Length: 366
Image (tube, rainbow, N blue to C red):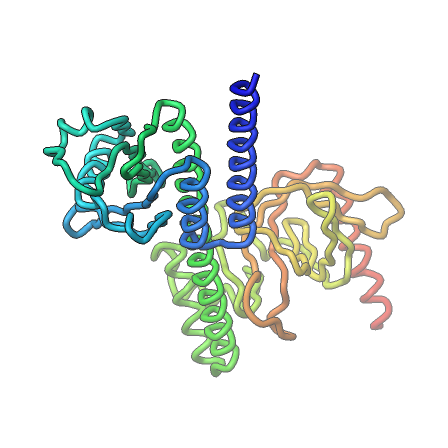
């Protein structure tokens, strides 16, 4: 009866040690984004949980492919350096072969080194490799020193759990560092882009014309003649907004034939975004919106034209966009869209609306 109670007490103590270890490791994950403080907690708590004498996390040195102790926790200062050379040797082998090692007693050490009689010596050892992004980068190791009891397979499974925690901490720290890096790149890119756009807006008309021509010719892969392009701007063959990104027109489009008006027309796209077009034609429109879509995106645009009927739904493609940089009176946030094969009835409604509006506007002027 007394033996059974002692066994139950030992089991309860072990469960309590596990609960404490997992709680402290979980708290470390919540409180830290860097791997180092989490690994320190794992090194300490795994030792207490498994009643070892020393636990160590070794990392691979990429310069010489050796391993070096990065985090160590020992029950007694006397255990800090006992058998550390032999432990490092086994850790290096576990990392190289990418498999855990369990040396239960002195008889298992003969395959690795000569086990000499010493006053202080390792009597049992476990070594488990750590992985990050599928690559072995370190080892979690634990030893018993001058102890009568040994580690067994159950102990190895428990230590594997702590090794998994360590690998997770390394993966998370790597992801956080990468996210910070890309966020920094994005911020730097946006700052440079704003600076460039501000500089462009301050250029003279002649300098702006030269830059605009050069950009469009690059995008057209040298297939657009510079003289023809400048003439197209003068004749309003293409919509032009200073600072907008221009795509070359697709074949079969002649914008000089398109009747167009400049009047606010409510539009709806993506089922949730609203905007206004101040430049409506039979073939397309310019949509003022703080959330323009990306170049060459295709979507359904709903035009709420004021002709007494339902909205007109037409498939569109983004052919140019002003999405970044500072917004000014001459550089509005928005996108130029091209209508993709609208239904004949919808195209007729747009055309009649444009003609009716122009006729009314002409009558008012006269």
